[in-house]
Image 1 (spheres, one colour):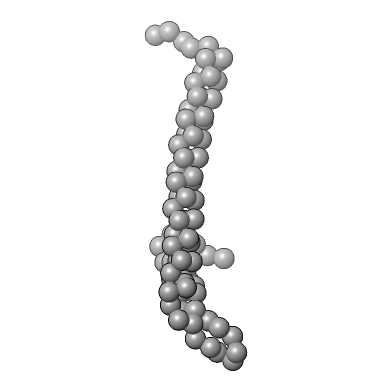
Image 2 (cartoon, rainbow, N blue to C red):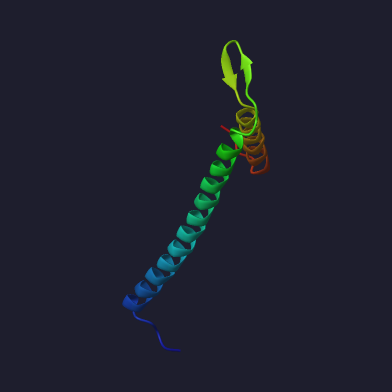
Amino acid sequence: MKKQSPFSLTLLQLGHVIVIGIFFGVLVSITAHIFVEGVKALSASRSLIAPINVAGIELHYAQVITLSLAGVLIYLVKHSLSIGR
């Protein structure tokens, strides 16, 4: 069996790091795009729902629903991955 030189092994490792970096970069890019499009959709739907007045402050149901969903998602992720403080 032929031994590889340290230089070729280093190049191979560098290639692996670059490929993995590109993969995760694309994955994060797609996730960020989906997040931004979701926020745009929620912002557009906000004007369709009549606001409620609480102590002179206008609250939209979309805000309450979005914040509640975010809280539930954070709770689920923390408990499913056993994340503590």
